[in-house]
Length: 170
Image (cartoon, rainbow, N blue to C red):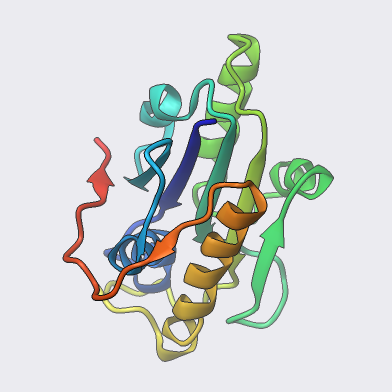
């Protein structure tokens, strides 16, 4: 099994960087099996084609626009992911949507996709998350761990946090 945990977003635009911040925090707190890779996808878009292709499952972490109150955390799986791409609810949606469509044409789609997202509050220029979204970071990290367990590849909590070794893309 090959699982990718992909955080996407622009860390220069406050809450837009939540996906990257979650994967950074996840990697500091958890060790993952060898067949699980953690990647900071930033705003790479189509450059992620090779990273996503042929994966058994991809967990995408991102800011999502759902029309719900800021700070609302969502998990989308199965048919809900298809709906995610029918309406623009993420600043990165076009990049991810295009990547997944291209992979489908190449018959290299991942076996499954889960999106863990939060409704953002602030897109101003800042390296910091808004307090509303920062308060959701721990819950999102735990959701990633729960999803790995559900996929049969549980992460192991580290006895002490590591400094970040997340792969940055590109």
